[in-house]
Length: 198
Image (cartoon, rainbow, N blue to C red; front, top):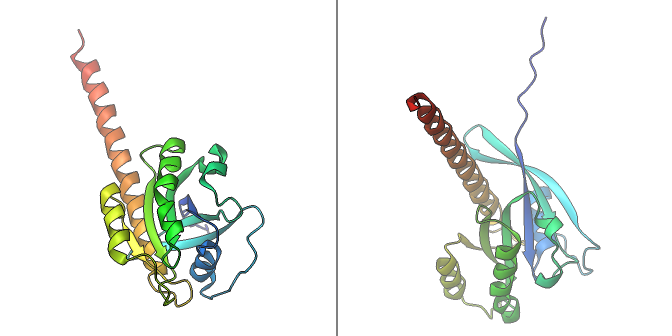
């Protein structure tokens, strides 16, 4: 009796970036373990977790999600960290205006270190808190300016956490499909040029 191997699930590297204490670690734990864990100490160094995400009925991809707590300042993010990343979740805290004000600096750093192919989603976290300093309209405005998807989330309640990763997974698959189609068209064009020769 022959055993058929299950096809390998494609996996992709994703980063969660943002200022210190915006909730990156709690956000990751909520998504991967479906629990809220209040973390008072900054994560030492970097950590990552794997999670399978369904982007279409019966179809999944595996995300390798890097929590970059401990490297919160955009000036300290290294080129090596960005290597191989296809998606970035850029997070700010809606109760801390300064974390929102720093979003443009984060975007500038990301643009310097990555290609235009990387997918970026802007997230305003901690909507469960009453002490709001950043209006939803402000987040929507900057997301529209840069043409990024935008979500407001709560790691505590789980609001929109899954939606962020599901949207990211869909965009990754779509972009990979587009790249494959472009490569196929380019190959066909080269073959046609060879046929026309002589």
